[in-house]
Image 1 (cartoon, one colour):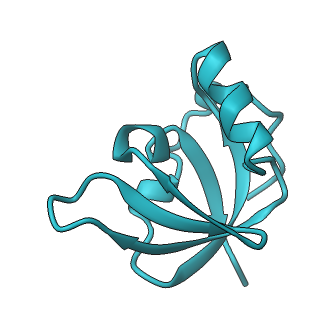
Image 2 (cartoon, helix red, strand yellow):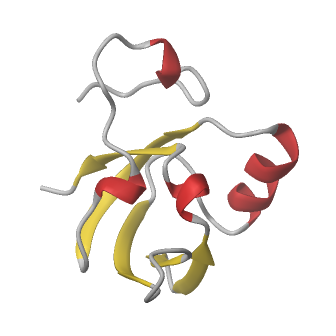
Length: 91
């Protein structure tokens, strides 16, 4: 997958792989985020930036929220937020 400019991936014709699509313990690289201004700023402050590796750890028993590892941090985010974070599978 070619690098897609931050916030512009939604214009692509092919369906994007999101953080919510990953399986437990699967790693990927963040390609972009499509969220409201306030929320994307919060996620960026936590390290959710294009090019950063991220690992999907697990989801709660009720399937929301999910637990992810970004850098050295473990963060809990809503599934709806994870569905807006486009990733590329780690190779």
